[in-house]
Amino acid sequence: MCAIFGICEVNPQKVKKALDIMYHRGIDFHGIKSNLKATFGFNRLAIENININNQPLLKDNVLVVFNGEIYNYKDLIKKYNLNVSTEVEVIYELWKRFGVEFVKLLDGMFAIAIFDKKLYLFRDEFGKKPLYFTKNGIFSSEIKAILPFINKEINFEALGEYLAYNSSIAPNTIYKNIYKLPAGCYYDGEIKRWYDFKRVEDEEWRVENAVLKLEELLINSIYKRMQGDVEIGSLLSGGIDSSLIASIISQKRKIKTFSIGYEGFENYDERKYARIVANHINSEHYEINYTKKDFFDHFEKVLNDMDEPVADSSFFPANFLASKIPLKVVMSGEGSDELFLGYRRYEEFLGFFSAYLPNKKWLKKYLERHPEDIKEWEVFRRFFADEPVFRGINETFFQRQISKILKVKAKEVDFKRFLKGWGSFDFSYFDLKVWIGEVLLMKLDKMFMSHTIEARSPFLDRNLVEFIFSLPEEIRGNKKFLVKEVAKKYLPFEIINRRKKGFAYPFLEWLKKENEFKIIVDVNRKSKIFNEEYLKEIIKTGHKRYKQHLWTLYLFSRWYKKEFL
Image (spheres, rainbow, N blue to C red):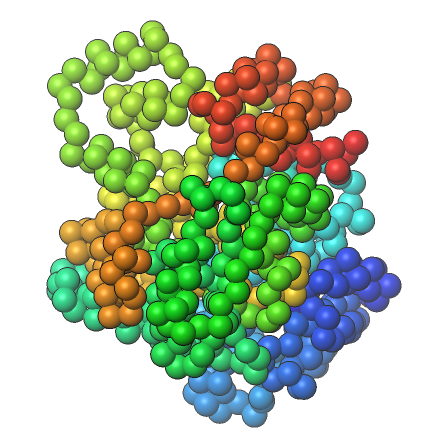
């Protein structure tokens, strides 16, 4: 929706400089206000209450600014008899009544800053809206707006997280002394949690009523995300998740849908499936073609829009797709695979719950005597050693590899904080926190907001996720069973039952053809961060066994070259 920035001093010039850096996040209005101790700034992308919802709000020496959408703000006005009409005013009034507890009343996606005698920061439970800060009183929607005010230095703990999970993990960022507020937390000088997902099983659920409840919750989630005074479209990959969302929207109004593909690379191109859905729901459909030239021409822009390295290759076509969308708001299908175990690899991890081997100790010793530098070896080592096997669907470098590749002593990546002992629901919780929170939602925010578009994710709704975490394991099932049952009412059979296909395109082929991987070694000879011998091994065999490792190192090298060389 917007960009927010603030500093705990009276300095409108600094704030204006930061807002100029984030101009792309909101071009409809720009505001700066100060009280006696702080200055807040705001770039607006107007979606709701277009003519009256400007920020920051300064009242009784309290400063308030926020980025996002509060879907239930009208209900809160009625419930608490508030004499206001906008979201930011609702936030102020609830703050005055309830203090930090006010945030528990909000239903939406948000990053909120309040200065009332001191600075308070709040972030929504999924982390849909980014919020970065320093401990000396600066906050921002983007890292790049803070960089002019600090000395840039690599955070090696965050680099270890990036190697493991494609991104730094909150509260770390790749920069020392810049932090990101974790999802579901607030900051008042310390990071404190205001919300977390819980697993409270309700044995009353049966398949029949669970399907009906999921449909009801998804419809409600979509409809509340359709509110606003602007046209809303939908991304459409041709997969079941985005197709179901677009179909439900189309029950209410004709919509525009958008898909991207790769001409000449039919194995990666899903536009034919998107076309089937678009015809089925009668949407106004747009197809975008993404080429090798587009990939290289826009590489530096995407790096800049990322803010810090995030090794998900889909950032690049997503950014290009966003540049072709003539709307302010689009819906997207993120979250369904993780909540309903749609990835094939989840099924593989499920197998470890029932696996029994009487010779585990002997096999553990055998594996340790015959180490292999591949993920399969590491997964079985964990199983035989009675360690947690699942450590995120997007785990790339495992700890031994991180220690091997970094020249500095690598601090062990803390994965245990994301394991709750919930059986297969650990998969969903872990990936909500790491893969979705730190990678997919950052892609939606940064790539689409770089083109002044807000992306909304109906599957990532608090009520819907709490419902999923209440289901017995056998009712939730896997392979998106419940989602497919709902979709039978809305989509053609060939879409519901098509084989799951991840978002992929031929970027590694393009990089290899252009001999781009030499950049990894060239940059490392200047940075001296990685062990060169291991780098060369990964580059030599990357197309066979280290594909994601290779991309992770290449992206970091391009980012490091841009920022430090």
